[in-house]
Image 1: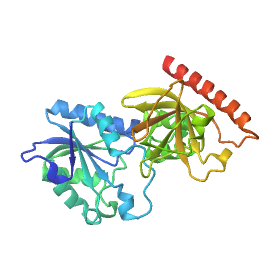
Image 2: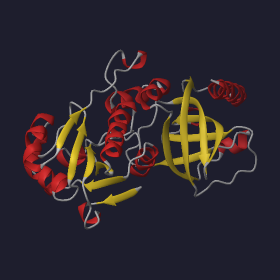
Image 3: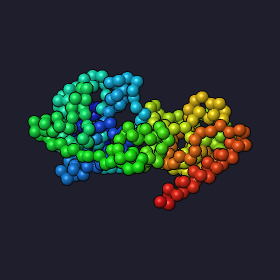
Image 4: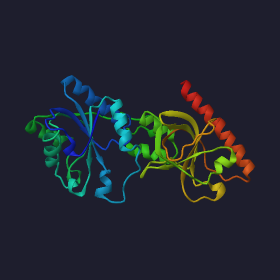
Length: 317
């Protein structure tokens, strides 16, 4: 799969293509529906499929300081899109200058001049151009002028987790912030993932017999509510069952919020400096301060046992 950063990266002579545009943070099941349709139609038409997305998130440029928590970094989104069969991903640097493009200029510069769109596929709420003035109706009106068609795909409606709301990144972020990682997984189509480099912490887990990987998460990452979770710690492609702690470590009066993962029954792991991924499968319990270290150790052992059970049940399902 091609991955371009900026319009100048698109090869000279790039032919017609099927295009879909959006932030696509998380590549959730609603996004998968739109992107999958773009891939399907591209194959029918005998042209490549292209996903156009932005970096940073447009809200950070239009309203500085309002960058939403991210469900997936760009390299992870590209990986997920490649799995859906996408031929190319175009990451457009979203600058103040770019944000001033009118909807008509956006179409001309991106869809027509560079990607030579034959078909554009979007969700019903797609907006683009300066002040988000462009919508799918306007896009369709420009189609005959520039020789492309527009297809609008309705998003699925979520089940119990969202109370019947359409699948959305906003809803997914809310569920994660509430600690409902199972509800978030229902929308994402997979467990929510947090990535980062393993750094040295206070090493109390090692002293207590439960050595953890202290993950320095990427900027703006959507991190679940404080608590203990079951999931996986993935290192160099190997996914290891893990008990995961999120919070400030109130037992030791901590103040810095951290994500720490204990790889269950793994001995002698040396992870400092490695980029790892932590997948959140299920909520185990809230973050507590215990009466004694002995009480904490009993709770940690129970957390590990419960996490193992939840992971095993998930893998059998």
